[in-house]
Length: 519
Image (cartoon, rainbow, N blue to C red):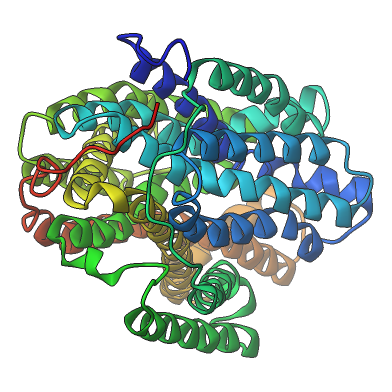
């Protein structure tokens, strides 16, 4: 047993180690994207090929998460967490020294196996270390890494790639990961595994769940690029439906399922699973749409965009512990309701963005959104894990993370498709008002004829080209504004009714027998 195990601050020391690993794992889902063009040049591959550096990580981490419940029957959370952190750190080192495109993709998969396990194991360990009356505060502190990672990733990746090279985005994990491993081995109690009933592995259920996760994520991430009616997307969608239906059928029929569907009898857990999807809409409404708006329409670089988004990320980090602490004292229903309303309002405020918007218009909604997201996330995690039996926490946390991952992919897909559709509609509507007979067209032609040399026909053609560019630009601005508002509407319409159904967060976890730890 660790000599720190009886230290009064043992739980908080472990929480710090968990935060480091979780932040690193989440960071690596976004830090890579800005370096993909440099990897393309280094290995001489095209855009479709290099996307597998990100896609492979996403898929591997998703199919790793369902294993956590089964693995927790065989290893303590501490051992499982350090093993995951070791695999992630080793995978990062291998990625930094990758000598070809194929080795880089393979090493990213290794990195993702560790990274995909870190978050659900970390959540389960926090829930195991802290009793229900303190769990909200602890999860709020731990969750700051989840919220800060996606916002800091692009900025850090841009700096590292610009000042060093693309390999540095992986090697930066090494000193941090090694330090966290050393502290973990010294501080954590690794002498004895918890006594749990060991279940057989539901291989068939895991296979069909993996089929569902892989095909659904591929469809959601490629639908807009390939077309939602393309054969590839239709096949992926059909396979994902088959995978989900077969998985549920198997889980209902086997004696020891991968996912005990009885967990969904716990009201708060089921509602939290659904709300995590709508929360992803609110999260990615800012994390996905806003950077594209700032880079493509305002003209900021990746680093400038990251700096502009930093205050919103800091707001989440500062408010998350407070929201978690309030979760231990107040009904989660009203905290989640408040978070949804505030996040929805911030997305409506983003709907007034313009390329000439000042700092107040750029930063104000981000800070408000950060407050809202903090009050959505901490109470939801706490309500979900407080609702399930102690022995089911690992499984519950892994599937909660899976739902968030799929919900995030769905949120990006639906917002991206909506913005693309609205851009076409706005372009068509704006172009209808510009014809060769319109007053605007005639005024532009008259102005150009008197300020530039050229025939009337050439002047008219120049006017049409200029007007087309202006129309396309304006249509994009309006489409992004519509996208923010659309995300806010989805969040409010879907989230508010569900939040009001949440029961008190200590419904079933206050009366549990503690796990025994043999000496």
